[in-house]
Length: 330
Image (cartoon, rainbow, N blue to C red; front, top):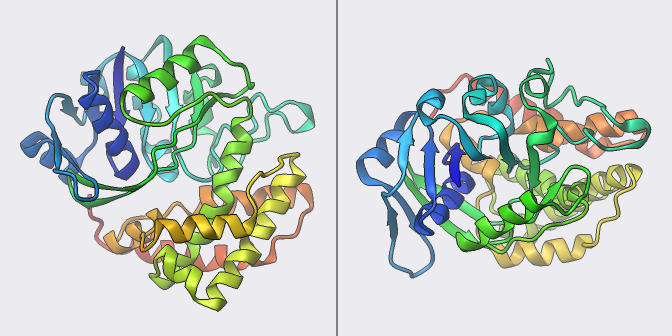
């Protein structure tokens, strides 16, 4: 299969590197200093005490047109970056091209093929003008939840910290030949993948923790372990997770992981800087709406109060505005 990874940040780059090492036909698409570094030195993966893996056997480009039609497109951009390139991405699509989405938080497609009276709800927070939905046919989409923890140490160099789990699922819950093909593809690349029959429940499973830990870390510059160890931030995280879980349950989603188990998992990850904290440190815009604002929006639609999430959303939105005024690391 021809595979294009759009965005080679921590997760997109980690998955792209695994696919390259597995001998797949891979194009890595990015811009700026990341692209320059990969063209010059390849893509390097660091993991624990293992020797660095330097991957050079891929095409590196910033042109969707040059990349051309693909069998699989893996969307590794941050949620707020998708709208800027979604029209150009059409150069990558053929009649049967599959789009695998990796975004944290609640994705723009969440209510597509949802069923019931909520079917087709558009989330203003993540797709305010409908541009993404306009340019991505829903039948292309396979959802994926990326559990690995990773960080960009410098352009073209990614440190893999923890985890290899990449569950995938069709929007309508079917077990299809193409979803199994994605699982096999990820397995060849060294990841633990499986087809799940409710990708939305899997999305919420991660989103509840991501909302709390990312927003608190961005505001405090604390690692996950530090948030867990400090009594006040630990309690704040509990309040945020509890409200997010109530919203998920309002949609009929049952979460299989307790709040206490989430803390145990976060403590195992240790001194990890969340993706939002990494963006703050690099002076980049933040994934506020997909991670936090979307839960506020859904809560309002359902009539479920989210006072703690609304307050932290206001703080992180202000921080994001400050990021916008800073020179960005590309």
